[in-house]
Length: 181
Image 1 (cartoon, rainbow, N blue to C red):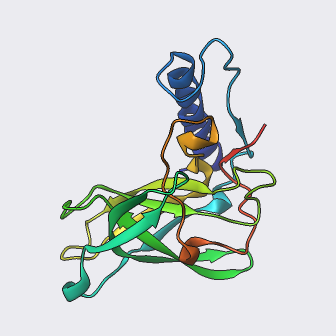
Image 2 (image 1 turned 90 degrees about the vertical axis):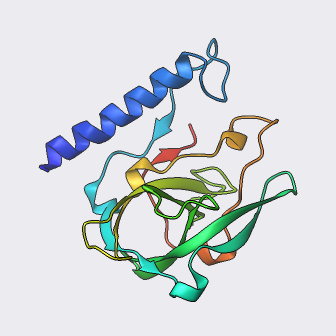
């Protein structure tokens, strides 16, 4: 995809999300909604990497995530990804809903050096598509930080949101995706 086609795709995704929220299908009051804020699209923050699955004996291992309300949320930890970030290679844990044997998308909650400054303090989320064309348990994951978003609890009370585990706290400033206004 050319840089301009990539940027257009990211901007279209953001436009559709704003329309969704403005229509009252999100966590904000549509009457007061003026659009979300984002870092400029930058394809340097998009990676297609190999999902390093857990050993078969541990596949789908339950992992308890804390939430902003003190409750817990249990998900299946299905593996990890290695990302070539600007300040060095970093590892993030990858999750899926419990009982989903071959998910099409995975959940990657993360915090970074922008958390609490330019982005929501508790962190952001990525929903990353899996490409299983490798066969067997192998899969590629499209980790695109330009699509990183704030959890609903960033917009107001009444939402229970999983918090990124300590293993997904990045020392890097990820200047991509949704940001505070």
